[in-house]
Length: 231
Image (cartoon, rainbow, N blue to C red; front, side, top):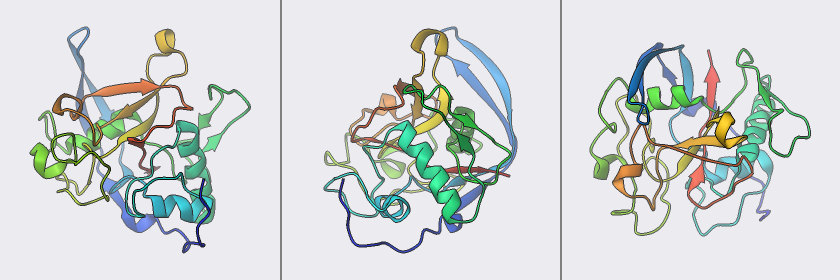
């Protein structure tokens, strides 16, 4: 980890986008079943957490050749949850999470009534990504996403591709994003979900419905996160 010069106090609220309440049809490709889910209004960051914001909150940032406006990567699910709570405290909000000592993070709980920052649920993420559309992705891939065909083999600064209809950038491509949810605890135990596709992925991975998973301690160069808040 690097320890550069102190950064300014974080101010994340100005980058939060109000997401209206609504409903979304989800699909399980394995069973070929659809179901309707209601989503309460919430706020979601306009883009993934950047390296400069991560450093401002934690005082350090994972090593990377990427610049300060690139999404932070090499952060685990546990790192993301810790960031949310520290940012909440820095802005005078109530942290959402409580945790114990379980190395698999099974004992991490989230109080969705708290006014602090948290990871979006998987349903919230897909609902926000689609932005009212039932299309496979929220716009033309080359216009809205950094992916294998146009990324040049690297992560890019946030908000340098077109946003979706709700003003959210990088929902598809650039980096995968951790969500709160367990993937399938009966089969994969503590593995958590991430969504959205990354800079090195083919178009098939860059879809609103694409799901992947890993252990909550995974750190890799195309996986970051964005923050949410309950309303």
